Length: 246
Image (tube, rainbow, N blue to C red; front, side):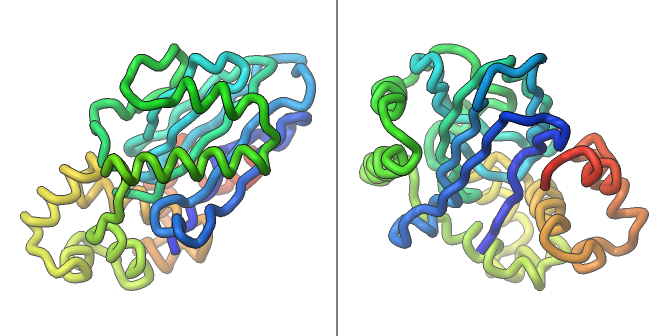
């Protein structure tokens, strides 16, 4: 199954804790993980998270100010998020394509303002703030179940086929073959359900694969790999691995 890496946490920064938990089996085709990112004590200077694209959609909750929550996603380039000296966030990371809510509601930036949409995110955030991470996972499961009932989260057959065939997909044509679609059908379907063109979707998935296996399994040569990696993350692979805890 598709297993994107966490966002970049600078190796030199201490007292920042990232915890990730897998969902129960019944939700495993929809949710990649439940996660928590928080400071263990006040930091001497602002912490910047280096977020990289993974084609996933996250629902994010600010546990310091529970009014702040939202649905967020990156497209094809990194984002540097200044989280300040003290923070506590919890979230649900949905697998690519399963979020069926308003694509315009997902933002290609950090969620830093009170939530004003129709989902019960502020109420959920207030409940989460009283719980430790183990109990939070149960609360997050209940939210996912509500979203399923509202058809805001559902299995995406097209992206599921793509993710299950990543080892044999090297081109958009391969992607179309794996989904039994024409290139035009794939373009329309992916854009509607994920916001990505097939080319951009493949570009992001290929980057994520490069963290889990040798780059020549997904790129034609080293030069192509380095160019693509730097364009998406802002760093060469060597620079990224030196700077961030991967």
